[in-house]
Image 1: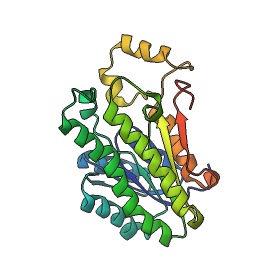
Image 2 (image 1 turned 90 degrees about the vertical axis):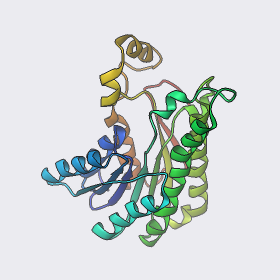
Image 3 (image 1 turned 180 degrees about the vertical axis):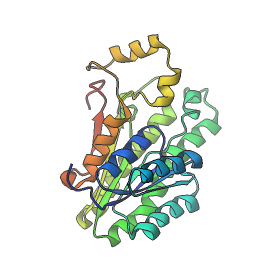
Length: 252
């Protein structure tokens, strides 16, 4: 893929899809700062990639803390001289199991979901935009979901946050597109991250596969490839979109 070489990218959320995206970006020649709530994971990921000759820095960060988000972006600027793109990918994968319905869900679950999935992505946007504008343009990519549009009997807070992310994408594209700022979302289907593979019963995996129009379930690299493409110079006319990468599980 052309057009990643030398770009400075922040990956805000380095687990699963985030880790695969970091790998894909550095293989394309990008210089990457990866932040994760699990600081050990982020630093070990970066150390392994540096040992292979790539430019990568890992650090702990909390997407719900504005100072922490600002520090993540500032680290990329300090170490690599600027910022060309940011991938906002953080999520609380534990709280989602408590996201039930509007009558029964504790407000603490709703608040935590919005804090991480929506407010945190808002904070990433506020931190990255000024640096992208200084650079003369750049790319913001967010992880969304088909849940934003499908309508489900469960996970209302999750769906609200993903719909909000897609609204944020359209806002950024509309307000700063003429300044060469691009904003897009990638909406994964069911992705077999290492954590899911380790715990998923075989019968549930078969059930999920039946719900797709593909011969297999998703892998983190499938999403990473789309993120890298949208960020690269080959994706410069993709603007304000939510791009489904889901094996045909849904059409939207």
